[in-house]
Image (cartoon, rainbow, N blue to C red; front, side):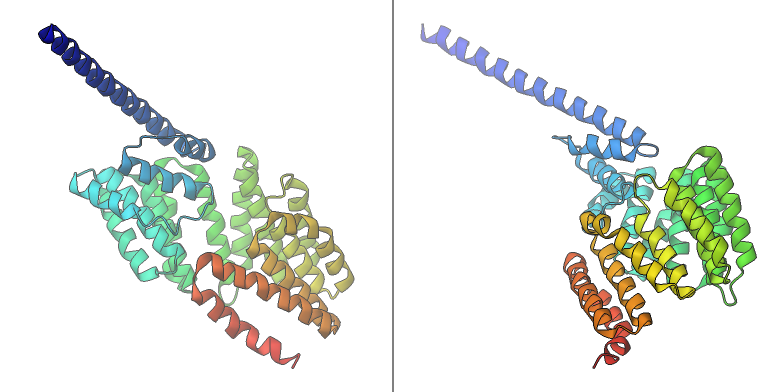
Length: 360
């Protein structure tokens, strides 16, 4: 009797262990399938990839970390806190997986770039470039050189920036067959020509027209909005306010989802400031107040109040200007709290010091 009972217990234990093993194996297989689906969706449907990753319960940790950072970045979410990606870098280098090591190292470099650590970012991006070249990963090489070019742009080194944008990133995207990213680079090169001293507006406009033509053909609304906005700025910079207004109004009509609303109205208000039509500037700023406040985007709210400050300062209404200036600083403090980067306040304090003195 005791022997039979022991047999029953032993069989029960084996069945339980087998059930657990099967369950774990099933969950692992399901997770791997979800990660594969998320990876395939990443390029064209990053929002769907992110939703899929949010539902993963038992992730293969390193692949999950890499895909999650990638999905968040493609959905314009903050990744500066995702420094744990460094563990994925170590793992993929250790296991000899050059493809994923290059991608993880790229995102480690991008995180450092977003945090303002340009020296560290360049170092990581160059390591990523070396790995990507071994793999012949042209699209990633395009992204790497795009970021390196962006760092040089932030440092006002436009010659080096054009080298990485035009000669490297654009060429790599072309080899990868990624016309969309190649077109974005064309627009960025146009932006550089506008920033040069003296500005090379004709070259910039030619590139913007080229980029806009492709965006229209591909029905790429976001790139169309970017191009229309850039063209407007180019005309505004050379004092052609009629054309500047024409293109920004086209952008406003196209922006059905209000994705570019602040950028568009920011440009429009600056046109009215340039022609000293201050009442129109105030009218258009007031017309978007509800949308801007509802967005709860502290960066937009900061710049929105700073625009009001500029308008009322131009009108000579210094008290109202000061009130808007103070509101802008409240949002600046919120930005500081969010990012915990003292450099933002330090730069802004230097910029604003002379402004405050006008009201003392």
